[in-house]
Length: 129
Length: 377
Image (cartoon, rainbow over the protein chains, first blue to last red):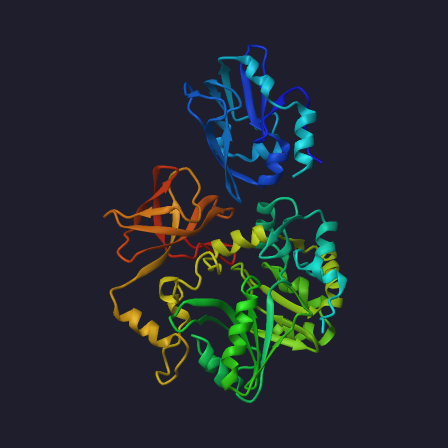
């Protein structure tokens, strides 16, 4: 059974989005997603300063099996990326919600988070897969 | 009149096929996938760990989905000499195995297979699961002019135990006399006793056995291997292991639209004796006379990223090729690939990955053997 913490929101494309105290939004992929992908071996990170729209492809994670696009859950500017992943993307497998975060966005409109699923909604979605 | 159809039949045609070990995989928590119509384990946790188990110690794979076909009859040898691009006349020692392509008249690869020599009138073939139906049809069609019988063996299970410790783990668990013979057989040879058949073959680049056994013995044998410390491995690890070993996968690195010369398999064609006629030979001779077609190479990505099937290979002069299999090499911790490219490719090339050109090095398509990296990194 996958772990789905209820402190954050989820996109139906399996990204999580966590609103932090400074108003920025940290993004990663769910435990369910990392389980589906299998061992992760490469992450192509976005660039700091890059402008992204909600739903834009802005990163790629590659597992032993396949490559998967990561979509930005909100509109804004990339203000931080997890450079640790360039040396070893297994952090996404081991700790998808903490060490395995991928990027941080400074959102233009925090209310875009309301369009995402809460933990329960996301869990219902993944149970059908 | 009406055909009597058992009620479960209609349901079953929509279901994926299961090997006798299906429950054993599920008990171990395997992640199952549909593989060519078969419900098979892709991993039991971490594909990379399973890969390392085989390279460093020992792992096992359920390969019962593969198709075992016996060729029996007075003309079995002549039939196979006609059917296969490699020559079974090379097989003189009982139990010896040979890798070969089976070609169309146009030299397209119908399938690749292993043939074991039992005696001049009896051979055993192991062909791919995904090509079973067309293989059997072709084998039977070609058998019309020969005194042979094509006997599929669907009730045999097959377990591949691979890795440097495979032989020491397997031999004590085999039925008594077979364990002694299995300890003695040379690479690419087989021995058997009753329905048990042990080949010192595999698809990983490591030493090991492929064991065919009666289905009703398979679950017990699998559990004995588990207790002996043999790690269960899924098709995911099987794919990265064979890629590192530079072994082609049918349907990906080659198919009926490709011939052995452009698939890195020229070494499997037996041109001598020249009087032997085999299906596809004339087409192959014609292809050889034309300007050189594609070449099959290995690639190592020098930049960051991941090589994948169908990415475009760009040569210095702008000519293009295509990656047929690519992915992550757990042993080398690099991205590697097999590719079909123009013959004039140099020592380096570029790979188009998501619109960007990345640097790759061209190498012989054999990256890892017997646990050791074969390429200078």
